[in-house]
Image: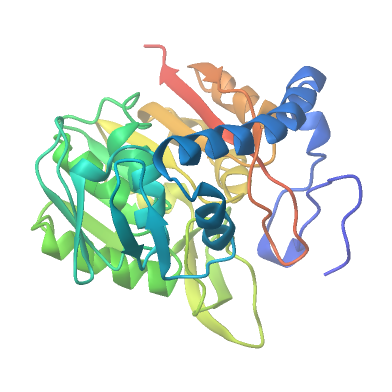
Amino acid sequence: MPKLKKEKSKRNEENGEIFFNVRKNMTFLDYIRSKFLLLIIPFEALQNYRKVYKNYFHVLFNHYRNNYPINVKLKNGKIENFRRRYQTRIVSLGIDNYCHFQNDILTIKNDHLPEIKFIDSGENGDLYSVFFKEEYSFLPVENRVVIDIGSNIADSSIYFALKGAKKVIGIEPLPKNYNQAKKNIMINNLSNKILLINVGISDKKGLIKINSEKSGTTCFLEKDDNNGTDITLMTLEDIIRSENSDLVLKMDCEGYEYNAILSTPNKILKKFSHIQIEYHFGYKNLKKKLEVCGFKVSVSKPQIGANLLSNKLRSYVVFIYAEQIR
């Protein structure tokens, strides 16, 4: 794949992807602000570590180099040995009283939800954002059908089910994420509420070969003809074909939100009462599409996120919130 210049999101046309200029897909002020936040966010993380760890520099250095296990010295006088990246993070965020590891199972119990268990969750998922920040609380899921595009390890799908969703349809294309998600759904006894499907979202039906060894929260559905496993691609229309009412959409699919949303007929998008999308390459085109479909739309200010694709395409992320005006 040729090297991209000037942060244009030109990607493989064979994958049915949208071509547009990332810089022009947000305001100039938001673009500059995202650059500024890139300097502030690491400083905030450093402050969190300084509050908790006596040897915070040692912990930070080894955490970001993934040199585990790490011996940590806590400000409360305890000395511990952390074997997982997630242990380091949850302690720095002050939520360790709600999270407990036993063997390969992480148990979470906070004030808003019943006890939840996750298998092999040390390197995957975003449990803090989903269960403690409750970043999907915008979506009114009670007694509704939730389409969860980008289910990952089923953290968001489980959240929706525990919040009273009538049914959750989780879409996860990466086989390793999908297999881990299945285990998490089963261990929480939610197989009767969550339907997990190992497919990818796109603008048309088809197949794509992807690297079956990839996993994580920032893995783009990138074509890999050499080491690939065939994964079915479906459209949003295909996914909701048998669902006609009380629909809510959550979408976090690492850049595929554009060809999925922009290609979906307006009448299909209008079936959703609420939509929350994590955008990765700006928001203007998505916002315009949803407004045409009758949604009231607001947008979180972009922050520079993880690089996506083998050519390290820079992402600009946060959320689009859309509520259908009846």
